[in-house]
Image 1 (cartoon, rainbow, N blue to C red):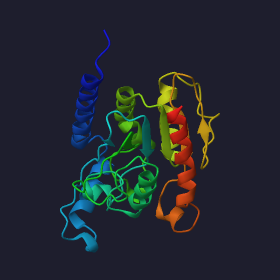
Image 2 (image 1 turned 30 degrees about the horizontal axis):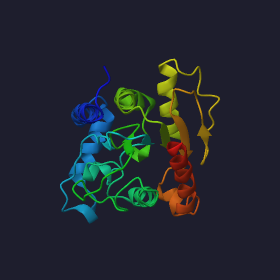
Image 3 (image 1 turned 60 degrees about the vertical axis):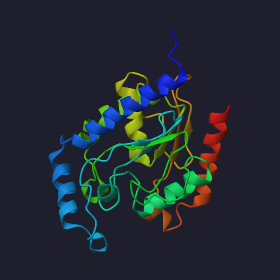
Image 4 (image 1 turned 60 degrees about the horizontal axis):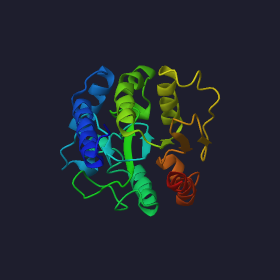
Length: 239
């Protein structure tokens, strides 16, 4: 018997909440635990009055999301400080301005967990749930987080996945490879604006440059570039 829509939404939200709670308690990667907690103790001078989160950062968003947005990892003084991915840093400023313009977020700013931000039809998570030194997670650390990503995808069953950068792109494809959905990642080349229809029963994969300052402040990445890709995703989801 089909599950009524409202009941299924509650069920999915509860299942996502279980994953979020497991993520926050995770201590699988000693290097990341040491780094995230060190940053939380020492703090950045500009945020010395903050009580840093200093724990893994769970995904968040709409439990009915048809767009799954996958990033790299929380920023040391962004998500690791605020407790929400892409919150409290320049990357988040850029990303949520774009998502708001495209209708996937109710506001253009992401400052702290209680700022009223809500995602509409989208869910955001990271390939690695802890801030890594120099923003460079080890392959083993990506592997340790893969189970969380697999379970989120299974619950949400999105129609589109947007990878923010090459590492997120490869992390998603590796999930498909390990599940036997694809034989290799080799045929799926990342670039800004890349789009792959992998299989009829799988989400369509889109790629964009990561909204890091080295991309946004150098002009390599602009709001117009994100708008074009998000517009294509909107049209695909409306089909």
